[in-house]
Length: 477
Ligand SMILES: [Zn+2]
Image 1 (cartoon, protein in one colour):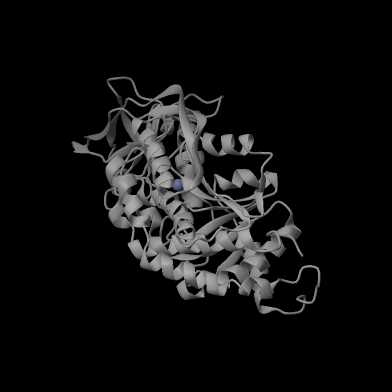
Image 2 (tube, rainbow, N blue to C red):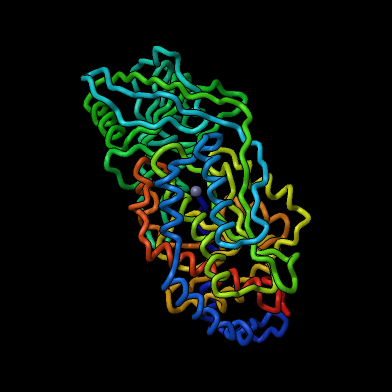
């Protein structure tokens, strides 16, 4: 999941959009005229995408026929095979799997129950990379804190030998700030370490979501070398709030946590690749993609089956129209984004000599597309790329995905930034994404077919124009 944009840059971008004082610079003037020439082609792509589009069919094949796809699982192996077969039958070129070594973590059986002041099942999901508990579980009184500051303010004896519950509420989505994920996710990443440093036996975190129907949200956590490794899990928002209320009324809730989770060491996996080879500059590459792995719950439909199928379908639309750009469009479906990033690192290392012009990642769900954010190592090039993207996205006026901004791209494609590529993220309407993120409810029915189609169209138009236009994205002519 990509993080939110850099705010000062957006402000700059808005100033630039409304101002006109510095538009005279002949070196960096946008090439409106060539990019707008692509409007008839863009219209063909939009029409073809809307009339016949296999994104939703592909999503069902991936999510209903195969299901969730944790790194190292047999279902991910099947998904990797399926993606190759699907792109081959679409007629894509150079379709292949590139081997990646990942580390395999498994959840095993797990449970959490309230013992005192009454017996109750607590809905939970262990966090990725957590260690397990002893087979009899860990039974202890809980100490609930609202945040890290409250934990820091407590004396050691209040924390030692307790199960620490972090009841930090994720801020609601807002138009200006986006989701509160970046703020809340630090509790998922670091809660176990913070609890263990103070003598806690385990950490339970309030699920990272601003909306809950008793649905625990998993996700990755991390240990450091210095601190003892204690088990950690996410519990439902409702359970975290109840434990907090019980404590506030002077009760001393006791919980039993049982987890069989373990790190099983190295295992084989693969990234999947398919291409439309460029007609004039085949060695210049525009990557589009998403991650093919998911958590081991739900179907990984929004995260990130959607990103995979819209990337596959983007080049399928182009191929069916006979549109071959000058540069190569390469679909990359990365493995192991959720718990290791081995796929992205392996791809960047293996392809470091490739000439990556740009990369677009779709990993925010298949919701209504709004535009693209761009992130480039070289700030001057970043500004040129931004202006070029504004022109490219004007071609998408008919579907409304017209917003270009400076900002984060995606965890996988971001690995190409150091190689000089313009790293981009497909921005979508993010209001609902975290409601089902990393839960059993991330299923195909949460994806709207028309919204998914518009994501595929946005990728198809943007990738085609960036791969075909005379100037290289980020370069002044
Ligand atoms: Zn994702």
